[in-house]
Length: 285
Image (cartoon, rainbow, N blue to C red; front, side, top):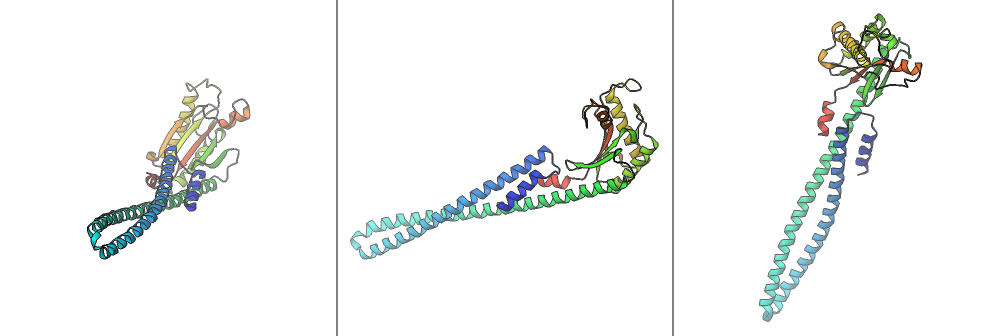
């Protein structure tokens, strides 16, 4: 049981990956195992009591059988008592058999749930390894760029590539410059090695209103995301079915919009990479 609790605890502190729905299903599976363990302990206790009762009944039957032999005058009464004792013995044996079957079934279910938890932990470890290897590959591919221009990190079981505005766009523009196109090409090289990686491109702006070209910051952030998606899919042949473009305007800031430095950090585009989690989700159902 300590091993199971350790596994459950490790799942809760994992940065992987889970959505709220995944966490809830995992908690339900763990609670079921704890309940089954308690039922198993209760049934073992009942089994011991039943066995003691069976032994006492058998001894009682033996005593009555001896009295029937020794006391002919009380034969009728003793035979009645013997019949009652035999009926009790039969009932006790049935209860013992039922208890043993329940105990066997409960034990099997606990073993199955434990195996499921072990499989789940194995998949979680594999997903961690996949995410970390992906992060390293992207980081190595973009190694020539300055830390102030981009950042590669892991959050919620996904790899984030955060590209600052100055690397990709001119102020107020959604046209990707030459240096930004080259950086996107290096990212695409990594993405094309694993067709199962899902890609979300999110555009972000600061809170300063747009006064030209675009209707508002929503339009600018979305247009920038779409521009990057077109470059990835048209120029670098990333499968369009894997890519989603979205804009957040200034409603998901990375820093404060009250300072020039904070606003500069907020003007970014994030490419979010998610490994295939189908097997993990299937196991949690």
